[in-house]
Image (cartoon, rainbow, N blue to C red):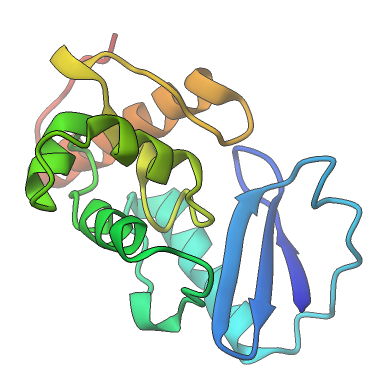
Length: 170
């Protein structure tokens, strides 16, 4: 497995690659930050770095899901993660709505488990999935709910700028 690191406004990100594609893109933690990083000569890693920079400048993360290594992910989790990927930047969906969207209306808790197991938290934006009535609940990325709140605020600001509106964030 090849490992690359990237700097972001939210801290270091670590990508792990297999021959099948991007296995994980996660916030650095004691678990993954001790892995030795490869040089950035891999064109896939360079392209990911560009996509990360674009995300933090526009709120849009452009990356093909086919370029991910989906090994060890169940069919249900895959459906949930793929549908989560479709949530627009600056918008949110509840766990229940996401469960409904993948034709499993009683599986809100299972959707939460899929979000917690998400290996690509910026690329598959689990921070856009919220509790009922829009409550911020759970975020496994570094910084927990505070990071989730900041990512949503950043994306809403980009969305407001794109539409020419001024948005007040709480």
